[in-house]
Length: 508
Image 1 (cartoon, rainbow, N blue to C red):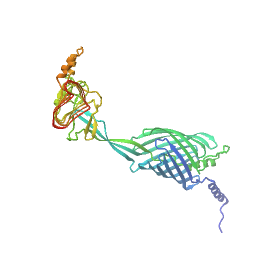
Image 2: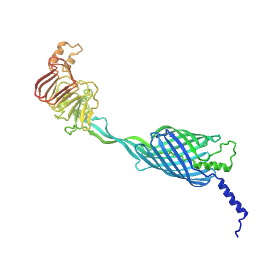
Image 3: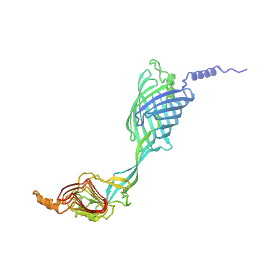
Image 4: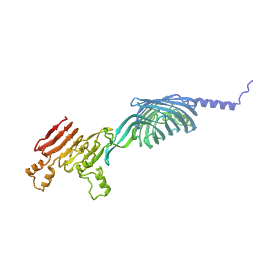
């Protein structure tokens, strides 16, 4: 026959059973969330809280799942496993770990998240960290571009750049806290939240951010939030959020007359164990443009010869004085951009007779007539100057000003030559001497015209374009042409003889 338990022990067992029966048992709960303006695409989400194992009002092991869709219609989501335990009558201690996935429409990113929390009845503190998995920096699009070419010495240099459109998942660490500021009764209240966070990993820069928000809870399980945050990657953003909790136990009675007891206070605190984990429920992705120099200071090459172009610069206003240091004068003697020559004739005397030499001329009086070696080009900064290179056609820097330099003599050219953008006026020097300051007579102009033609060209493959020729005997004299001559957009006026004279033409 069984021996009956002592009365005192029996009563004790019954009391514990009754207490456990009356304790709140967490039920599955759900949440609907809207978030906008946090530096990333806004998103809506549906989440669920599912308790796996629990001891009512003591501890619970749970799963939390979430499905997101952002404002572009791209999906994501996450799954976290968590544990919460009643640390004492006023504090819940929690921890979690899980993974999140986000599709940006171009790439997919995954991260692992861990965190811990302390929850009180009217306060909380959370610490979260998220670390991307796999390739956190992904290139969406790539383009090869060139920088604006720049003259240096006697060369034209250019940088070749690779422009990558990049999406990068960020490593994040955040510490946040919340506190109930006002209890309006009837289950409503106003909470204030604030925190600091770190953004790093494959971010364009490591950055610390700060944020603060107000969370209004008009009734149990409904929350409206507005906040402000700032960091070095997403700048300053105003944030908005709406959260609705479905199926969770109320944290406090809506009956304002209810008197709090230790038991119901503990029950209301434990109801927070069914709250969603307070964290950023998406993978933070930075959209940016990364620029990489593939080749720096590449000399522009003549694609027909494979040699670098050699530029002889002429600028009468910037030409160095003979009183300058010897090294400056040496640079000037070579017609560099840093120490240009004062006349085209000087540059023509330096230029080798080949297609790689270009004389580049700025506005002003650039001296009298000159003879151009075969193959050499004369281009002024007046018209837009397009040059064929290994990178395709590029525009010479500084060209397109519309101001043509003046040549006060005859321009003589031969085979494979180009003359572009000169104001050729052989009478200009005689007129300048005559202007002292009396007016120039018609006879003086006629005398100046009689001494020279504008351009004299012999040979083949000659191009004359965008020149202004005036006060000459003949504008363009072609006494002996063996091949193609291109004459485009030239203006010829006030000639004593022909505007264009064709002599012995064997070509076209």
